[in-house]
Amino acid sequence: MSGDDSRRSASEPRPAGDVSFLSQVRVVELDLGKPGELRSPGEFTPVGGCEERVLALVRHQGHPLGLIAVTSTAGDSGALHETLAQSAHRQLSVGKELVLEAAARRRRAACGKAPAALPLVSVIVCTRDRTEMLPACLDSVLRIDYPRLEVILVDNAPSGDATERLVRSRYGERIRYVREPAPGLSRARNRGLTLAGGDICAFTDDDALTDPGWVTALVEAFDDGDVACVTGMVLPAELDTQAQLTSEAYATGVRGFTARRWSLRGPLEDPLAQFSPGRFGCGANMAFRTAILRATGGFDPATGAGTPSRGGEDLLAFQQVLTAGHTVMYQPDAIVWHRHRRTMEALARQVEGYGIGYTAFLTAAVRHRPRLLATLLRRLPSGLWRWYRANQRRTLQPDAPLLDPRHDDTIRALRRLERRGLLYGPYYYLQGIWRQRHTRGTEDSGRRRTDSTEE
Image (cartoon, rainbow, N blue to C red):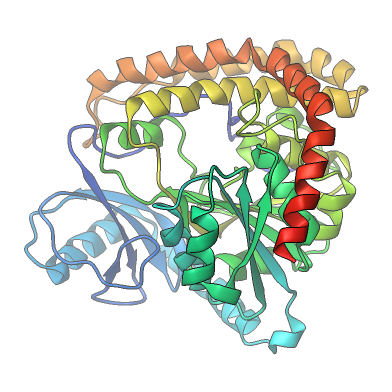
C-alpha cells in the first residue's frame, strides 16, 4: 500500500491534542487571507471577543494550515484576531502559505469552470429522531458553494413524522426527503445511494456541519481518475463539555494537513495497513464515485450504528474500494465540523463501540473476501506489536501548555473500554447477519409501503 501509513486505525486510541481539560474551549476559524475576521464553525457570522480558551483552525485563502490554541483575555474580536494571527505566524510554517497559495489559485480556477462541466454531487445525510440537531446540519449543507448539488435526507426508522414535517415545511423541494423503515445507518446510506443521481456521492452525519467549500474540495480530489474514495478533515464544532474535550483528545478526526493517498499497487509500510482503514478518515466526511461504491456492494447492512456491530461500515467501504484496485485519498481541504457527545456516559458507549465496530469490520472483510484471512493472520503478530508499542508511548505530555496530565486516567479508562469492545465485534457482526436474514421480508414490505407514500 502506498502513502503515509503512520496514521493509526480508527480502533486505536490517539494522543490528546493541544486543548484544555480545565475549562470550556471556544472553537473558531481564522483565515490569514481575510484580515480582521473570525468565524464560528459552520457559520458565516463573525464572532465577537471572548475571555476564554480558544482553539482556532488557521487557514490561508480557505486552505487549512494547522490548529493553534491560546488563552484569550481580549475584549473584542479585533484584539482576539490579532492574538491568534501572531500565534499562527509563530507556531505554523509561513512556507506553507506560499505552497497553498498556488493550490488556492488552482481551486479558484476549478470553481470558475462552467457548471455544466462539473460533476453532479449527491450529498446524503442520514438521521434518526434528531429534529433539534438536524436544522443546523441541513442549513450548512445548503450553504455549500458548489453549483451542481442534490441533497438527500434519509430518515431512518423514525418513531414519528417530526423529521418529515420539519424538512417539508422548512426546506421544501431544496432537500429530497426519503424514509428508510429498516433501522441501521448502513441501510439508510444504501437507500440514499440507490436514489443518488450524482457521479459522486458524499456522506456526512446529522450531528455535523459542513464547510461551504467541502464539496468543491472533494470534487477537486476526484480529478485524478484513479481516486475512487475521498475523505476529509473532521474538526470539533464545539468543545463545551468535559466529554467533548475528552472525545477530541481521544479520537481526533484530524489526519493531518497534507493530502495523502493509499493504494494496494504500492508496497506495504505497515503490516496491518490494509486492515486499519480508519487512518484514511471516517464516515462523517467521505465521498465515493457512485458507480464504484455501487459495484463494491455499498455498505454492509450488518455493520454500522443501529446494528449490534455499532460501527465499522465506513472502514469496510474504504477497504473494499482498496481491494477492488482503486485509490483512497485524504483531502484536508474538505472540512466537516462535528458536534461530539456531550456527556461522559455517551462518550464511553461510543468508545466501546469503536472496539466492537473494528473487529466487526475485520470479520466482515474476511466474510466478503475469505482469502484475506491468510493475509490477516500472517501480518497480525507484527502489527499487534506495533500497536502495543504505540499505546505504551501514548500519554499526555506534561509540558503541553493547555493540558491537565491528571486527565490521562480518563484516557486510560477509555482505552480499556475500547479493548473490551474488540472482543465482542465478531459475535455482534454474526448476530447482525442473523437478524438481517430473519427480518428481510418484513423490511422489504415496509419499504414498498414507504415508497408508495412518498411518490
